[in-house]
Image (cartoon, rainbow, N blue to C red; front, top):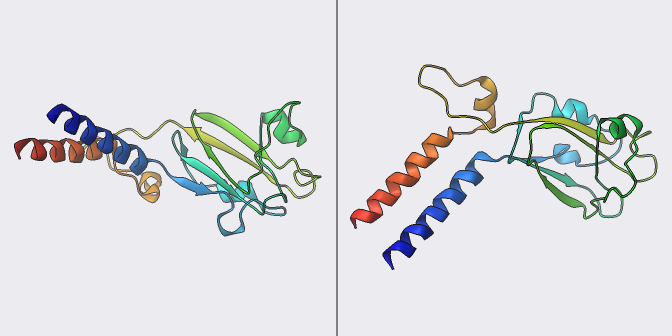
Amino acid sequence: MAATKYIFILAIAATLVHSSLATDFVVGDDKGWTINFDYQAWAQGKDFHVGDKLVFKYPEGAHNVLRVNGTGFQECAAPEGTEALSSGNDEIILATPGRKWYICGVSRHCVDGKQKLAITVELPQTPVSPASAPSPTSAARGRFAPTFWWMVAVSGILMMVRV
């Protein structure tokens, strides 16, 4: 019984740590995923990390989201068999680091409407050492070092063990 209680507490703590580190980015902010919007300007200055989420919001049926490679991005063309996301509220979890490219495959939205996004995804942030100050980028993201959350979780568990 006690072991089950501690496993449950650890599961909750792990969930809190993961969710506190990830950031959800609504692509285009209040404009959403649409034509005639500068997505490169929107992405500039944002730090995308593994575990973050891109949310593409648009009226269902008006657009779609296709993940492509660099060539597909430049040519506004998805490889044969690429599955389009088309719910109007598409969420993509950034699972790996590196360059990521997304286009709209409806009509000529990518070519004429510049409806395309390229980002670079970085590895998750590492804990900040006491000797170094946090960068303005990490402060702007509103993230705490992962070590902080683990300390909170372990402290909570230890307090419950004493009870």
